Length: 451
Image 1 (cartoon, one colour):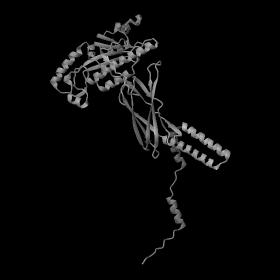
Image 2 (cartoon, rainbow, N blue to C red):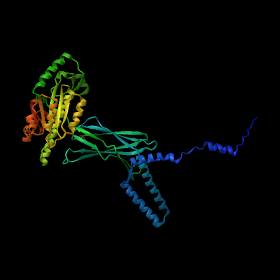
Image 3 (cartoon, rainbow, N blue to C red):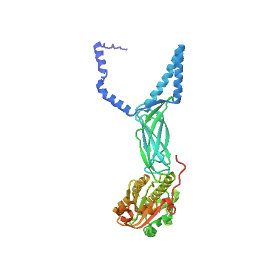
Image 4 (spheres, helix red, strand yellow):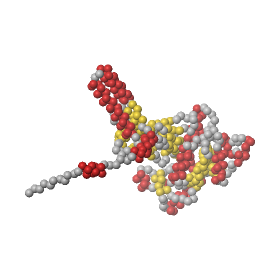
């Protein structure tokens, strides 16, 4: 037996009250005004500009031709066609501007960059939007070399990376390889993010405000075995004593690459076979020898192009020689190095021994350049404050010894190098402009694999 229940009548008043209770409350407009201002400020901070491409201009000309024909002939089909084409332009503009809004670009560079040596730059594009992605995003980087002198040419290179898609709330990463031929300071200038999705009729452009810079260290060349003779032959005896102490201890704390002049007994054959490169045992030593080098960079006053180019070659050769010595000292642990740089900003790099100190020194050598003002007396004065007595002083200069130590002004002879600074016992002067470094140094050759 089936029973059928009759529904209870619902009054109009009850239904009205229930509907009113379910209806959400709207926030007053004055509460939403601050959020609207913040959103407008964010959009103004990252403006996205759109420009017609060559295909877009052709498409716009076709739209104008269809509109003109619809007006003159009064054909309804042409009016509908013109409206459809204008809708495509509107969709292209809307997608370009919205998909590019909020994109950010982040670069990750290696800790140290050397000239004429390949390195990689990592570029990450992130999309902070919640629901709208970005497609066919082209990230363009423009690297500009800032020359040391106004007469030098400014070199630039543009690199483009294409990201197929950047999903909302995520990021995509790509890398590109570079090879810089000259040391110095480089800037990222004119970087931007663009897209032509979906129809290619417009290009959405978002400029990147996070411009960065990096310093390129000098190229590291090959030190010839005769470079130890610069320090009066005492390093040779020191290395013999070191080898005897090594044979007594028989323990080491690390490995390093083989350098000319290393004893064959230091080679770690098992690691060399595994790495396909000669590896040498690195021993800890407390009584390391201290080496003192002065880098003298003095630019001539001549304005001739040939003289200027010859000086630039001599300057780079001197800087690369000192940088190679610093790299050898930091990786071999057989000495402590002090470098006094006499250039536009006299600097002392005291007791460089670790890799971190060597990285800072190489960065400083990367931007070292000479001026017409002679800063050698001031640099030697700074060096004398730290060392009251130097047994062997090595001076790597771009000029001859006579020009470097001569009296500049007879009235100020008390401040001259040759009359006041006598804190060294023996000085070895190497003129890079006269090819005096060829017996001790083989510069790195330029790589043809880079951009």
